[in-house]
Figure 1 (tube, rainbow, N blue to C red):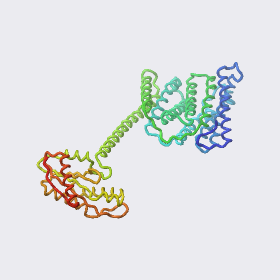
Figure 2: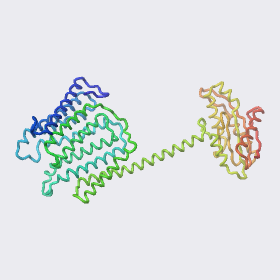
Figure 3: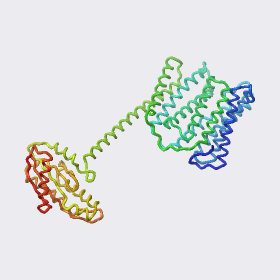
Figure 4: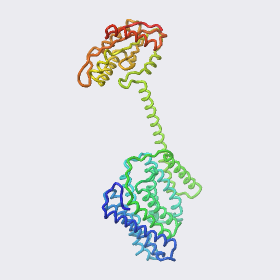
Amino acid sequence: MGQLVGVRVPSWGARAGASLVLLTVAVAVVAAVGALLGPRVVLGDGDSRYVLYTLSVLLAAGACLCRAAATRVERSAWALLGCALLLWGLGNVYSLMWLRQLDTYPLFSWGDVAWLAWYPLVGAALVLLLRARISAVPRNLWLDGVVVGCATGAVYAVVVIGGYLPDDAESVRGVDLLAEFSYPAGDIVLLAMVTSVLAVHGWRLHGGWGWLVAGLAGSVMIDGAYLSAQTSDRILFGAWPVVAVMLARAAWQPVKRVEQVQVTGWRMFAAPACCALVVLAVLLHAVYGDSNPIAIGLVTVSYLALMVRVGLLFADVRRVQARLEAARAAADQLSRTDPLTGAANRRAFGEAFDGVPRDESGTGILLIDIDHFKQINDRYGHDAGDAVIVAVTRRMAAAVRRDDVVGRWGGEEFCVLLGAVPDAGVLELVAEKVRTAVCGEPVPLPDGRQVDVTVSVGAVLLDQVTTLDFAITAADEQLYAAKRGGRNQVRTTAAHG
């Protein structure tokens, strides 16, 4: 106890924190027993229970302030929470020593000032803890926080404020109404913030958040039950020390920073779906029961946030679909493209060949092989060989038309598909243009050297019924004739399949 994961705490701080937490637990146990058994036991009367309740709050304040003094990590947050508890306890002391001696409580006193300071201080502490413990929260979770927070606040307004409104509210002064409703208003805001903490954590709590959320939610529930006259002082004085234990324990729980909150599966939809039901229930209550403007206002905000949440959900779905389609298109492109040169692979070349219109205009196939490529690899290395293949591909693509297809057939062998070739003479001219484009100037290598590169070309003019396999076989025969003839030359023929 008193140790914080990943945070260096002085030994005095750890010992003091552990002692304060244990003392808070001990006082809470005594207070709970006194609340259960009542005046039949020592410390079971009303004043004694109130003293124990106040003592537990002050001890919890000491635990939080000790945490703030012991380490800089989250110091401001725990200092604020400690001050909030301290002011609450001092308000109790003021009530015990002054207010409880009066025949009639004043509508507003210094005790109320101390108690009401609890809400802004705790809210600021929660905000600081969220900033310190979470690096990034998706916007849909922030919206979930608004949706859930307003929905739970609306339920609280129906249950607590619905029975708290005076019958002659119109005749009550505005300042008196403000004093009366400052506590339930603070409880609604605090409850909304606590449920928002749950939402932005993806409904999973780490690093003491469970103790803190349970303690703050418990304080709201106890206060709501007390304000709506659903519980007695006896229950209040016995339950609040348990809240004090939770808050003291939260101060000395392990610190865990969450880099990115991820929510998947049913948790993505559970909170919005439940809150939609809450909104419907509150609106039905307003129609068939007493109209509660606070509850209606809160469910209206919750409903609007829910609509925005649904809109963002559809936008996210569309973005995911767009990414999937882009990934599918990229994968399809990769499956049709040679990874080294970016030229068409055999599959894409075959599809292009099948798509060429078989009209009266001829179709040409060039089968091209880099001369003495193995010697280039052996002498300069495989990186140099890859550079030569890439350079040859670019020069061939530049020598033919945009609509012609340049493909890598395998290794150092290439194919070019030419459309609208009127005769074998034109085909030979194009083949010579490709050959001279490759050997026109040396190819620069990665190490700065240069190498002369030549190619041998087998060209075939196809008729309207020639298959690709037949065309490649015929072009391959012409290619080997060019190699046998001394390389760096073109051989042309017309194929009839």
